Length: 238
Image (cartoon, rainbow, N blue to C red; front, side, top):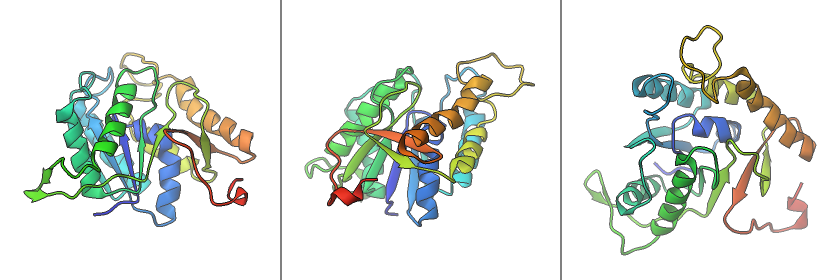
């Protein structure tokens, strides 16, 4: 299945938290979107790998994505080496996305910058003809996405561009809260974590509102880029 957008995250919930509204908007416009999770988030303080699997499945249904795959890399310990790059390359060549969305280049969780560089490197290598990969017993063709964009996560990084996601925040928040073991629940007996507070859950909305304020809309999600963003005309900019 060829996809328009492939969103890749180090952990289940990275994509929903960071670009869930963008995905919901693109799906509503008829774009085909898929998600690849690098790990199962098995080192997370709250919940289990099994509960996270179920939550990721439910979140994907809410967003309406066409595919979701978990590569089952080791949470906290995966590295950017040939073995891991080849597995990501297989996904890129399988789905042939025009755009890849991936983790923040610099962030609080060590897996986020690791995942960011791993995916960026794999996107380049995926276009090299002399790298051979096989999926489902078939030799894959080279494919390099046209664009790689990095979403914003824990740190308030200044974006290179923002997407107006007004009208799609409810869908995003619903997909995030599908991870019911991870986020704010006043009745939970699980240990508190940096993302389980009410302030963090509230921040999903108010951070998007702040980006929206800066461009004159209700909500927005921000991205950083690896190369210049090109437009055909000054009038393409809003």
